[in-house]
Image (cartoon, rainbow, N blue to C red):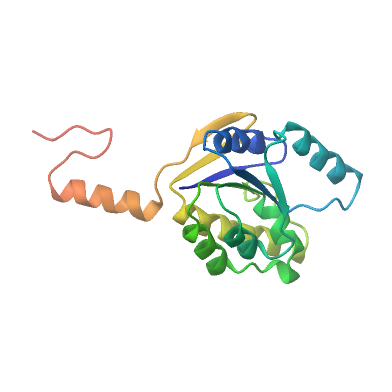
Length: 187
């Protein structure tokens, strides 16, 4: 089972992901993508470490995220896709390779990612490339996930099915004479 947890900075996404991962049996491995490049990031990493149970293993994956997932057994909490993409040349992740590695896992996988598409339009080419690449990656991971959540201000929104799936369901319902969602039948 793949679960995607999206949210902005300090939204509570990592805390939710930690709770979700802890619901699965051990072993639980925290796959970390972030690197302490400055004091703020070092403090964030330390806060994440402090919250995790001592029984959880930690794997720092570097840029080979798919390889780290393939080598890890049991439950995985992957935190986060945005810091992984930021480390890649040109912000170009191997989306197909990552999705394959996620689907191939036998244990539960909780994936954390930053939702960057809700902010201001980036002022630089690099900012726009990062936003677009991470947005496309989030969509691809969402497509292989069994559940997806958006965390905003500490509140959790359960995300529904993909647009194509919802459109197919509505088309199927209409073909069978079912009223549209929220509507009444015309009798």
